[in-house]
Length: 500
Image: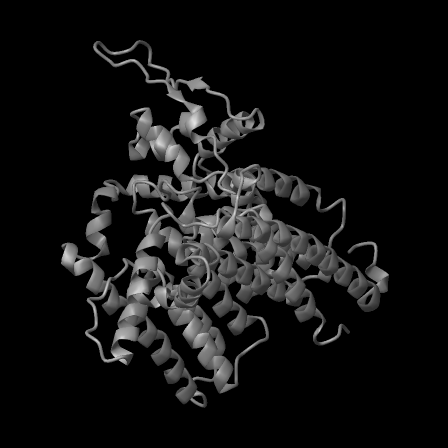
């Protein structure tokens, strides 16, 4: 048997290695990334209001963000540190890196209950760099929700039923937060209803107090978040629904098409931006037979969000890949670990091939700021939602690949015309397609790569040194985590040494 603390020690090294690698290539800024600036402003005002209240001064009017104050509470430590060191913007760029790394370490610890040490480490690394989790560590959206969803499932299922009050309250809090940190979280209620059923199945009466307390904490956290979100939406004319009404589908047939497209669309499909998850199509049936509760958890997480977002004209938006499906990546990786718990070369060739494709795609998403393509669309006069989400000419992967080739050649001025094929002739009076200069968008978002040859001083020089040191730390921590895993395999199961 393995040592009780062995997996946790490897997990600590894994956290350090992934966090440091993400940080090394981070943009170290959050400007233009979704609603992050809103949450920084809200967090800054929270700190100002608290400081004024403590000192007996007039409390300034609050600034709210679209997902309410609950997710901002988790940003307050980063914002406060930012006011003491560098800037809130710099420290907030670390927040999604932290939550993504925490998500991956939770995935690793759960996989250790389901698979061998080597396979657990491999799948975690694939999740970290071969799926859309890597770009979103810099984009900053979705990371909190995905972390709390996986944490809730881990607490509820990884070690059997939760009997102790402290762990049960932690599970309840994580579940409530998963439904609260984003407005879309309400769609996940079937997931937590199922986890509750698993926890108290056959024991509702003897554990009635625990069941009522769990439901109360979950519901209370969600209710607080829901009511607080209204403080943002009501002054601008209504709830979150008002903002998405123009994007709703008109036909049920489009709903069916969206379900297929959410996975297989060449421009926004989950299998394009996380290719390794193709294996989950083959794994899910066997996973249900081997680990029914884990498989149902993954299916409910995936299906619940899918059921909501397919009411939109597209399950994706202008952000990299199918961002609302971010929450499904880690649960589906669990199913792969259930079905293939040990690494056998002949069996894992498809896994390695898909992982390689995923690393290439995710590298491009992490290398460039996702807003560069949006700016190019606008400059070309083609910035419609339909072109943005479904036009192969503007495919995110091919566009960023074109920009990367340009960057390798030092970003010379390059004229490019996003031409479309008329069927079969251009209509009378149609305007010619507008050419744009790709040099304008040929800028990596990594601070280290962007500023490597610049003359820096003061804080900017410190930032560069942080990136360089982080890269060295990532390398050393990665070697240490691999060494511990290999050593553990030798100690734990010498018979299966070749497999791991």
